[in-house]
Length: 149
Image 1 (spheres, rainbow, N blue to C red):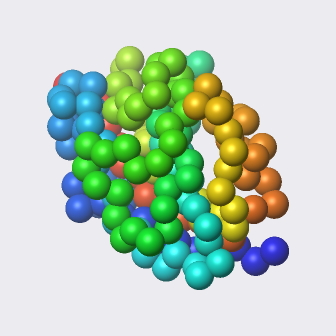
Image 2: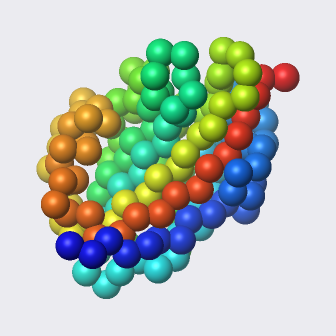
Image 3: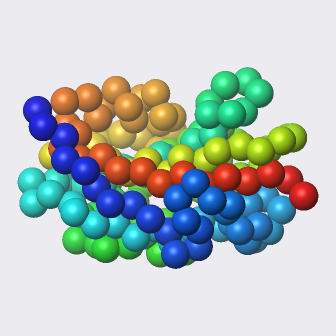
């Protein structure tokens, strides 16, 4: 299966640049707006995974959301765009960048699927990724950096 490219960017920060404090645990801890483009016609839903691969104990999941509608061009700031699963904070909502030390990278990964997912809200990233196998028709990401002040 050919995987197309989604465009994903944020008006809050440029790719590979600093995430403003507003979107972190040191600020308002709300999700930044994400602008989305090039969603394929065959897509039935979108999935968003926000993760920090630089966490001391391995990749830390900050937000997982599925069944996001495909008729959107942006995920609004401070919003719940779909069904939220459990992140590594054991919460059902966005948990902003909050590194214990040093500079960390935060990936905002967006997947377009050819189906909607039937997962319980207790699902974590591993269950979500398993459910996505064979259904990804497009992928895109943007990355921001944050270090505690």
